[in-house]
Length: 238
Image 1 (tube, helix red, strand yellow):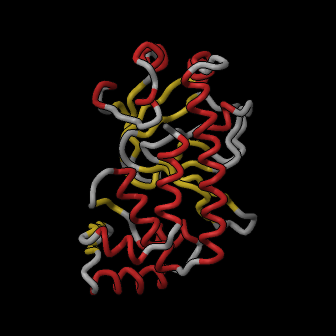
Image 2 (cartoon, helix red, strand yellow):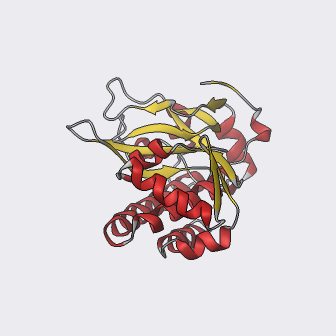
């Protein structure tokens, strides 16, 4: 992690909902950081407690669960709509999941002490974090249903659309291997589906660089979970 853009260049949809005075108070102790693909933000059940929370502004972070046999599966993704370190607001000093940077980007890193101080009972940040917690629970439930009921192709389309929304551009770096690992499927499966989408003119893919050419067709190929999750965020974070 290294110093990146200055704070006034940063935008996080959760923080942007704060009144100016609360925003200035919270980000007064922040540090702008750059997260490269594969950077580890938190380790699962790490000892020593969490020192910082993160508010992504570009890029995307994955929360993953590590199984005893070494397999790792994505449980959630977080971009500029939310925060990484929600367990701190729930009274924990550790992360129940691993957090890694999946798509390179920037964010704001805020000391846990400053974050908790700003979380005054009944204040705007307190209300926003509570609402974001409710969204995260619904998002997790929707993901479980999606994984059980929808095809791998639908899930990949949904996942790519979510990436696009969070990085706010149609082009981003992502390998088949990493995508397969996050979705819990074989790499060959991702390769076949990506090839089908490319032949259909929905995406282009070359050396890990994915570009969405036809978002509307991708939305049609995705499952209902993409729109349901997106609409719920807009509703609950008003």
